[in-house]
Length: 100
Length: 168
Figure 1 (tube, each protein chain N blue to C red):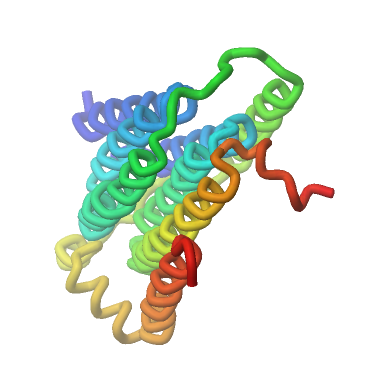
Figure 2: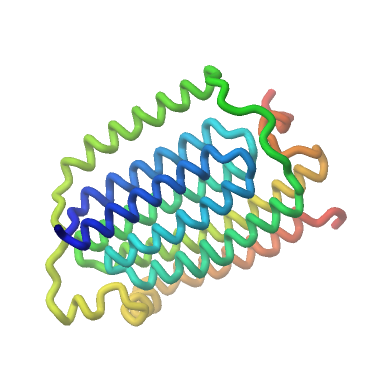
């Protein structure tokens, strides 16, 4: 039996790595991939708690997170394509029209 | 030596290594391939947690559908390698410090949570995490959220077409 704490710590480490990538990387596509890492960490937490409680509800939550992540990827990548078409770049520091 | 613990250690190490490659790889293609292997190793961890349905969905939806979409966009945009790397700017140092701080706080909280997995009866073990049980739960207690998610996917699909189209 592996203690649930190990799974939760792995999920926390994965979430922190995703957050580091979002903060540090400049390529919008890589930032999206790091967001996917964070969503997967949340999924792992749901599934670990489901195992701890012996309850299927965590699996249902993970299912909904996967569906929302698919929708997010579709919309996000469409926005990246639209921005690349008008600006010719996917680096986030080139896209700062709305900053001021 | 406990075989479950060995498997968990191997999968956890490989997951973290792949996630590190996602963050630090220079070209987006390498990041995407590392993300695919991260999803596969996470599916192994889900199997260790008896979440077989989620493991299958992880491989089918994440590693299959979503990553194909990512690779398609990367190849469509024909991106090169990132122009700079490795310079420890102020933003990177601050990001690393924030990450380490968040992990420390999370670890302090998580270590206080009781760690024992639930002991299930043999019948409960046989049905835990199977697609039959999950389908029953989703279609009885979570029917409205399920339909809302299908509507969300439809809206996302139409929206992606509208946003990515050059002229409406």
